[in-house]
Length: 148
Image (cartoon, rainbow, N blue to C red):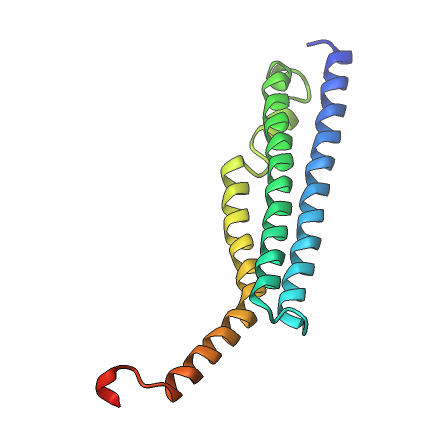
């Protein structure tokens, strides 16, 4: 592999890695904001509002995941294209690139766990309120005709 091709691939790799990191930082910021909103908001008591907030967050998370998936795919493709440079003086560096970074399966697992936690935090208070009302009504109302 000539030096110019190697330079172009490494620049593209660097740019793609920075893009991937920015996507994850955006996800972390949005996740913290949504979780914080779910925990502290006094306006998020309606189940409809909580469902809408959850759907909005999950739509954002899905969009972010698709962009991260593309960035991971490009990174893995670049590592494959850099493979011929493993015999060059920077070979150990290229080898290190091939074992670094989050995989697509890792991104899926991360999203599954974090997204479930955020939706739980958004839905917790409205569902708890519904359950409280339900249980209070059960105490007042007879459970069957036999109780009358």
